[in-house]
Length: 82
Image 1 (cartoon, helix red, strand yellow):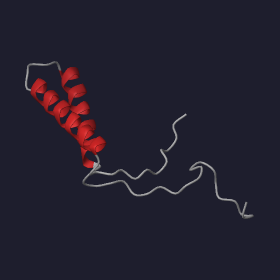
Image 2 (image 1 turned 135 degrees about the vertical axis):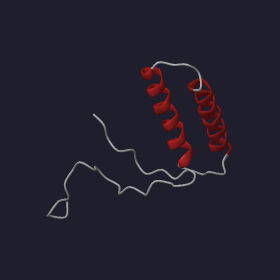
Image 3 (image 1 turned 90 degrees about the vertical axis):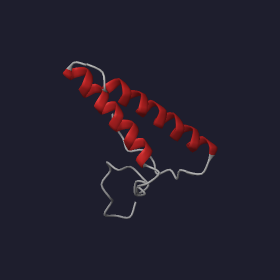
Image 4 (image 1 turned 45 degrees about the vertical axis):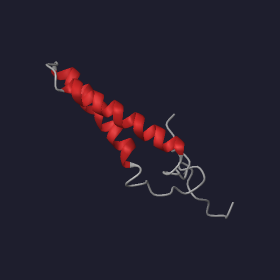
């Protein structure tokens, strides 16, 4: 079952985030270099998807996702204030 992640504030100045950012940049660049080789269309599609995933991770620092409301996102609000 897929559920939404709880809202978490990321400290983009922390050593942890900087390590993740450096790792993701290195992996993205590695995939880009590999994508320059002669690959099948399936291999190219997989690499492009992987590159996009790293780019999405790195974009969190530039465009953080909006805060999510707390509670169960699949449960409709109660009409009775429960």
